[in-house]
Length: 150
Image (tube, rainbow, N blue to C red; front, side):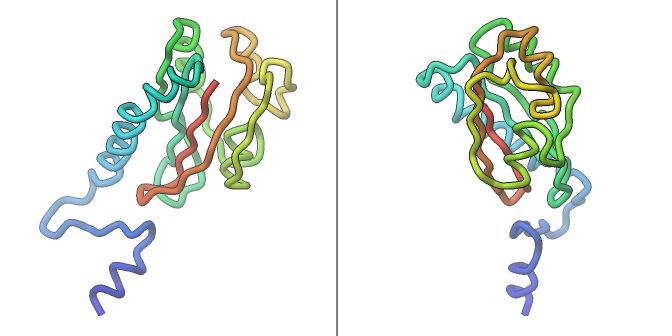
């Protein structure tokens, strides 16, 4: 019965016994971010992207994504990353929100040319030279994650 209860917990998260669980969410976010940074740096460079970013759910099941981190290969992309921290996405507005809602990958050849109603960060994309952008959805035990590259 205990095994069935553990399997029914959201995202198969198991609470550690005898520990304070108040830090579980932030620790899991750090684990996901560490995995992203260690895995996608080489991929970003090999594919010729200026950078990649990760969007992580505020808390598992919340459906609200916030900027979790960036791998920047060019100086302007670092500024783009700083600009992006102002945003959170939970609906179909913008590339990140659409990927979250549909769970399908998306590619836009030039996000700087899109209207704000289609790409909320279009003003920043024009300012920081961000053009083509794609993203994929990933569901982890820690919640929803979207990886975007430009």
